[in-house]
Image (cartoon, rainbow, N blue to C red):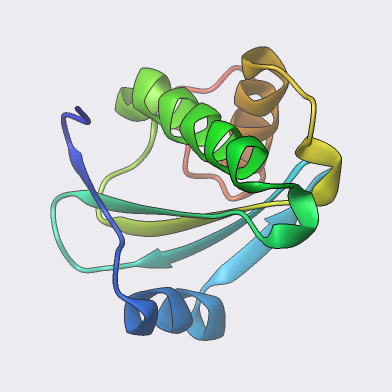
Length: 116
């Protein structure tokens, strides 16, 4: 269970982050970030059918959630974060996903106390 964050569930919430948020991309993931005016973060994960069948998609989604959960304390608070998996994420492992997540977090300047 995530300590400081909840899930982004409503389509309207996702759409708002897509429309108003800023996004950065790397080989595996796309990360959209938008301030939400609260003291906690909300994480949304999206993995399209292009990535693979439901087993593959759920695995990628779990890896993304877990890599966020393990590094949650390093993210600034008060953000809606939507992470979209790209097709290249298929067949990757936890470390690849975690590295891609932190890379995007650094690009967004939302990682606290990062190593430059």
